[in-house]
Length: 341
Picture: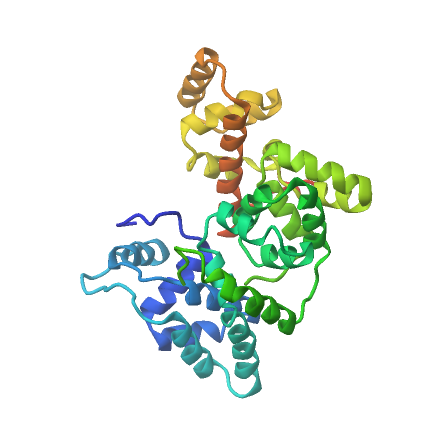
């Protein structure tokens, strides 16, 4: 890309930016060819978009279409929600358009959840720790898993497992209940300085993704409590979690794609406590020279804090998860039948 954003854009974010850059007529034609679930995801991304520079748009056009854009490309400052409404209204007629818009507008009303996404984990943890565990579970289920994981670690230990189990057991929640939570907390939230301003809610997969991104001490403590109360749920969570050693189940092409986006320092740290089998898999997917250099660096490296090693492994897992969400690789985690080797 011509410019760097603060963090890499996900596939849905890129698609939302590109559609807005191309205009309502183009977006209308694209919407006609998408499934409702894909349209709704684009709506969420458009609603959250902040101004986008011309440089980022140029990079996306080059990435998606492989040509050098003209100098007339301008940045985005349009209202993503308004853009989406017009495009959907043109793409679909009658009840179908209204159904999609009604569902999306219900999510857009949840200003609390939109604002809370911009807060750091410690602030949110302190803010919601006195709420009922079910309320906390509903809130965390609406957030990105990485943010929810950070918030879980800020909660009192005696409620962490309870909250995670409630997330795992959430299914469909009526919009009225979510609106009640939004209204009840909205006034309190406005008192927090720095606040400016959803995904499908809950389930075992969401709980597993959140737990997967906590540190090992938190993960172990929560899993121990869940095993004492609900062994079947603990077993299911373990099946859904993707840990660093699960890279052994990932195909070589995907491993190479991951390695391209990981620094040698992170890799050196992450492999410090990895199994010999995983180390060999990683070395196998590097050039001979790069593998030898990494081995030499590991041989002469001094002791490292376990916390730093775990953070390096989590960073690599996060890269792998992002690449999978963008459709660039396939991960074969625990409990999956379709394992690529």
